[in-house]
Structure formats: structure tokens, C-alpha cells
Length: 440
Image (cartoon, rainbow, N blue to C red; front, side):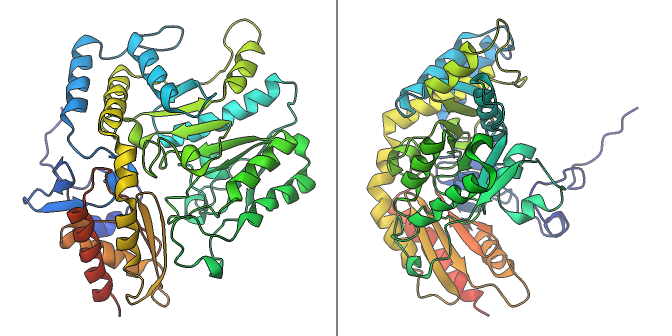
């Protein structure tokens, strides 16, 4: 017989967390609305990170809530293996309306991690369908983040995410990251120097042979590693090299999608169209987990029309196109359209940029980077204690009523796109005081 127990912190093994520290010093969130969370004690916390880069329209949007409630009363679940339900097709069509031209086919997943693995599998299936089954090698980038599935983790390039889990996938290589050029320090927007770093792909082609390489996967703006903005010309050069050798280019738009850098997707802002594009986070404003992969029509046609009769792609998830998630996605995209959230991001971007760079002269600030409504503030690590300075800033900021995100000794900011100037002032002002307080 089960025995009821009082609620405690023991059962939940928290993701990406110092469980031992947290359960001795918990910081909890209980409610959310607009730009703010509220703690169980009733303290208001300004959200400087849109949750985890995902609540682009702000919290507690009634339109999304009501869409989910309505759909739950009509159809709570239906499979999409050899069956369909109308709202999944509607959601896919709405996504296809805003993806880059020629990317009109959408495969649903449940997260950014699943989207990354799905994109890699589609790339392999594409080449096999075209009779180039020797193309099995996948190229990622140092400091890249593509979720925590074995595919995305393998092409990802953050050491801490990989070292516990063995050799990962075979036939994977990595491009160098674009960070660290001295002439790019404190650059505003896209830095001027570093386009040549894309030429490392030519070296990998020479090493492995183009006939073995299926795809290159990068983030238009690398977020989780600490906001690495692509140098001017870098993505264009990467696109040209992929075209030269018949390699598919995959953009991980899980963070940069749905208005985060002032356009529907990063591809639009940065002027480069990939062959495959992953998305999640802002797709449903995080109200229901959902991810998606958009592909060029030529990729879809090769896989579907190049297969014998029957199932063309042996891949999918129980919850692909889940009715409640589809309803949330449609409502979210309608909010983005009606309120022009990408336009709002563009309008406040100059003020945001200047505010972020106002932190330049604070103690231990060694670089600042920004693109759209994203900013990264890099701090000098404490000797022998990497990551501790930024974590102390995170905790102090939270205790003063502001939520930020840290990765290593880099502070990452990505507020909801409904942010206004007083929110920016409060966020940057509180952060500045926390950085000063942790100067020692």
C-alpha cells in the first residue's frame, strides 16, 4: 500500500543543477505573469532570461492558456503514426508561413534536443536516398550546443556536456569556434573579424573527403555557451563551402527562432538560408513542450520520393504534433504576428545594446557581446575557481529580484520580447551592483 508523504526536495533529480547546493539553499519560483516570476514567499523576480530563452511573449499569456484548454476539451491526444488530426497540420502550415522561402516541410518533435537528433537523421537519410550513402560524417563546432541527445551532444562542442558519456557517435568532427579574437572584444552586434574561421571546413573536407560528409550543424548565434555572435561573412562563407561540396547546412535555431534577434529566424537576420533548421523554445512560448524541424522542399522530396512504397523515414515520437502543443504553437504564432514581437525586439535593440555595454568598465568584465535581444557579459574567473564568480552573481541577482543565466563565467541575458526600457534599466542596474559586490 502506498503511503503519502509530505512534499520535499528529495525525489526530483534536477537537470543541469548543483543538486546538493540547491537542496540546502533552494530558490523557488511559484507563479509567473508578464515580465515577472513570483516566489512562494511573494517576492517578485524580473525575468531577464525568458525562462530558458523560451518565453518570448512573456509569461501567463491568456491567449495561449485558453487555446490549450479548448483543445484539451476537444482532443487530448491522437497519434500521428499513419493517422492525423487537423490541428497538427494547421500548426505546420503556420510555421511554414514564416520559415525562409523554400523551407515548407515541417517535422514535429518535443524539444530542441529531439529536433537536433531529427535534423541529423534527416541529413543522413537525404544522402542515402540520393545514392550517396558514404556521406555519414557529421560536422559540429567547438562550443556548440545542440541539446542532450546523443546526436546533438556528439556534434556539440561543450566539453562539460560530453565528458561523462564516453565516445559518443562515430564519424564526427568539429570546426573551431569563433570566439577569442582580440580585435573583436566588446564588439557591438556582429564582429568585424573572423570570417576566415569558416575555411576550417575546407581542411575537414581535405582530411575526410567531401564524399563522406553529410552535414554541418551550427547555431546562427551560439547561445548556451555564452553568446558567441558570428563574425561578418562567416556564415556566408560556410554556406558557400557547403554548396561547393554538396554538404547540407543545418542551423540550430532553437534560441534564435521566433523573434529573439529581431526577425522570425536568425537565418533572416543574418542573410543565410540553411538546408535544415531546428526550432523549439519560443515555438509554444514554453507553455507546452514542442520542437520542430523545417527542411528545404528539395530535402523532403529526395527522402519521400526517393523511398520505396511505405514508410519513407523511420523516425518519429509518440508526441509528434501533440494536439495541445499544436494549439499552443498556433496561439503563440498568432501573438507574434499580432503584436509584431520581432519588430518590438528590433525597436528596443539599440537601447538594449547600449545598456548591456554600459557594464564594460565594471570590475572583472573582460568582454561583452550582443545580437538582437541577447547579451553575454564575460567575467574574469576567480583563480582556481572557474565559474564561481558568475554563479555568485547569479545568486546575488536573484536575491535582489532579478533572474539571469550563467554558463561558466559568462552571464547570458535574453529577456522576453515584451521587455520595456524600465525593465532593461532594472535588469542591468541590479546586475551591475551584483558584479561590483562580487569583485573580490
